[in-house]
Figure 1 (cartoon, helix red, strand yellow):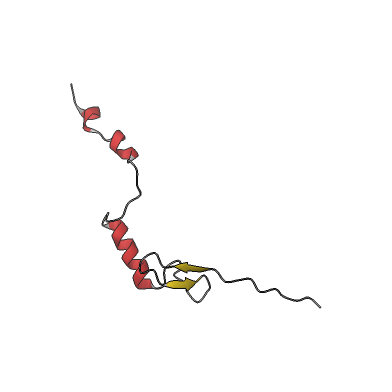
Figure 2 (cartoon, one colour):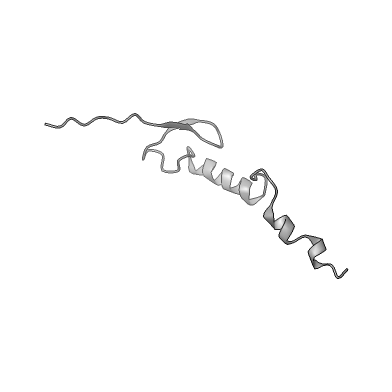
Length: 70
């Protein structure tokens, strides 16, 4: 007879509200705790309130000096 070994459940903090949740099917919006937190995060990215640190490669590509006639 085989014994099933229970794996420990991973706990993570919601990136929006910092509520601790378990990484299980009980939280389908993971790593967010709810649809509300997931949507708030998306809105922050869409409004450019959040961004990845560093310089944008588009700044070099679309710089004004490349399009000037001089």
